[in-house]
Length: 157
Ligand code: HEC
Image 1 (cartoon, rainbow, N blue to C red):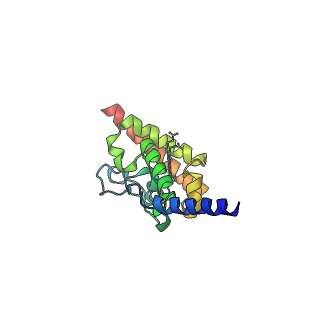
Image 2: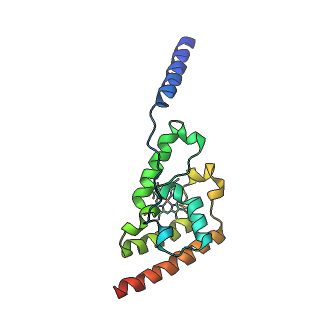
Image 3: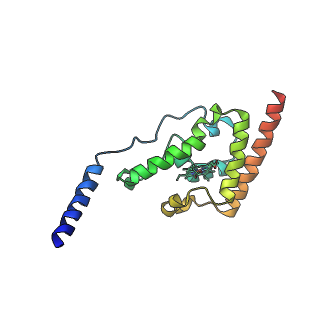
């Protein structure tokens, strides 16, 4: 019995070590002119909270921490980023048409109000990314204002 446990632990350790040789590609790239912060006038407070609470999963630039290099955390993180960017990528904001932008703005406010974003698992390790009620109100004021501006622009075009 003790031998079985020892073999099991050995297999576990070897698997862990071998897994470290497989790393997902890092999510980093050059600044893009399609970034939401380049295209709209975003108040500093809103820009700050987007960068601090959303950009790690919804942009082409993630701020990594040391433990993000360790498998299987590295794969979990890569998965969140892939899924997050598929839904919304602030670095590629300018590539969406106006109506998609308006929809995303509305969703940004809703997801934050319903505390679905940032993801709970992310908040466990990034407590500073948690949005206060005040920050959510600021975000929603801004998303509402910008959607109205975009609607007017769409009507003019
Ligand atoms: C840890 C990664 C992570 C962070 C941080 C994060 N998101 Fe997400 N987000 C995701 C993932 C993964 C999805 C897609 C799956 C889902 O909806 O749960 C998503 C989906 C979304 C969607 C689309 C929802 C839908 O159902 O269509 C919106 C909008 C969104 N996030 C906004 C935000 C905002 C705003 C922030 C910052 C306040 C934020 N996210 C922070 C990972 C993240």
